[in-house]
Image (tube, rainbow, N blue to C red; front, side):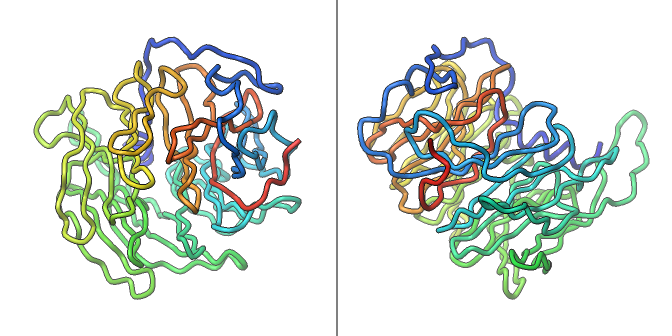
Length: 381
């Protein structure tokens, strides 16, 4: 079993379910949940960079969508890649520049078949580096430094009877120069996974999985010094975010009950773990909430729930799994994707302090990657 399968398992947001899709209304040319059909109760000055990929397409389009606009504007750039590629993206803070990963190298094993691109309005996307981990998302720090997970496949392991062992690969975390594409390895790991979970206090926070172990470490991107934060956690952790108090919030397997999933909060200074939730549901998709609190989906029938925050948020778009994608630089707005089986995701935004919901217009009939909030409103119509 190649490590790409492990990453795909870690990236699953929700399994199949039988809940009904939310009631739909028409906004512009798009069908969206009725909760978004009316304008938000307060002004929504923010804009979001979106990447849209039609099923089977060999290209992805960049759009900049003002919150609450009646429809999305035309494509501002076109990224070409393998047919039906998985695209993941981040905005460079304070700009309209997007860095995105997409599958570009045809291969039987897609583990490291992605490339990193720089995309901006009215410019041809620039390829920066290849060998990037399939379906991984770049990390962009608050100061605009860009990091990706890359790797080289190791030898295929022998079968142990009917048990197929995971392949062990040579993995690196690389910093990428946005102007030149030059790369510099800041951390190396031999194992199954080296995942960019976040940044805190000048460190990159990494989730690493190797034969017989899984841990969370802090790495200095300048010196390469590595600090072990959590030396042993169950594998299959996912959905990482760093809160304002300096803790990593994530979903993981229960350490004793294989049928249970948990949401844990790991203090990045002390290593102390606090349990926030336990559930038999695997699609919790937790994320720290601006100003304090936890956003997650307790079950598909409930939709998004925010606990411990000033605003009351519960199922704003009805049944489904709501996955937080980005928080604005001023922490005023949260962008998320509302997902349901056999339906295209619906992007939307929540005003963090009040719980007001605003539509994010997007091209219909496409998979949407929310890159983040950007400066200005270019692209609206």
